Length: 163
Image (cartoon, rainbow, N blue to C red; front, side, top):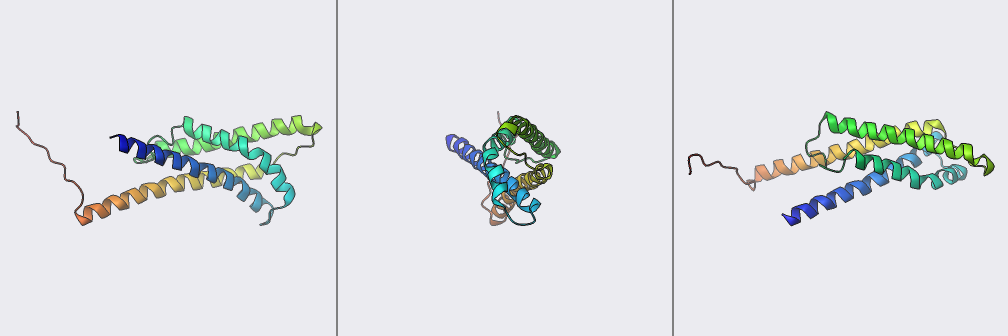
């Protein structure tokens, strides 16, 4: 039993690490697309200081929505809604924090990211995180199907009348 708990915990940590990569790649990809498929040095300089709080906001919201709790074994509309809402709230919070930093940063010459970068990154995050979880569910289903076909699966039985 203890081995199963540690295995599930490792899977949750791996999913969280994948989400961290997805969030960071999504923001860089949105800047890359916004600048017509090249990454100017000024855009990287604007994005790099923001990556830390952007990652903390999204992962905190994913944790509060319990997206890592069941690893989407029983994926349904509720889990999909939680993923989209937490990504949407994360995008709005990142924009608000960035806007506040921009207003406060006029003294320090800090520029805000373009609004379209937030919209693009929201779409990337939803597509990639939901896609990754759907891929995990499909992988588990194919693995279970292969076990059933090979005859390795344990059969459940019920004994009636004992007692």
